[in-house]
Amino acid sequence: MIAQQLRRTSRRRHKSHLDRGAAAVEMALVLPLLLLVLFGLIDFGRAFNAQMQLTQAAREAVRVKALGGTNVDAQARVDAATGGLVSPTSAPFSKPTASFPFANCAAGDITSNAKVTVSYSFQFITPLGPIARFFGASTLPGVGDLKTLSADGVMRCSG
Image (cartoon, helix red, strand yellow):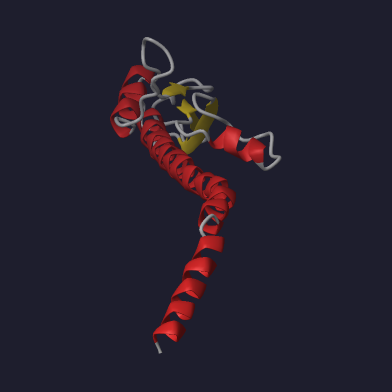
């Protein structure tokens, strides 16, 4: 009886000894893929949030312009709508900026449109690019890379 238990115990020890490094090898194979997915989710979520804020800012700014407001008023509305978007790319932090391709709406003009384009330099914070290059992709950005996001707003003059 004791001899049988010793044989079973030694078999278990021997089998676990052979499987000891398998978990480390599996983790080394799966970890880069898990990090790629995790970092992709983080940066995609941040970029999607920034794009939604830019779209809202463009709506707000074009409404100001369509109702006869000035460029300064529209830029102030953009700043208020995108308060959380600041890109630490240079010493003066870059904020979303609005451009106004058309002149101000004249009073009573209901035939033309006001248009505002809001743009922002989005900065990636995760090492998505280097991990993606490990899998053969070469177009994904890395830490500190910039991507310009923009949103347009168009509204008929006089609201």
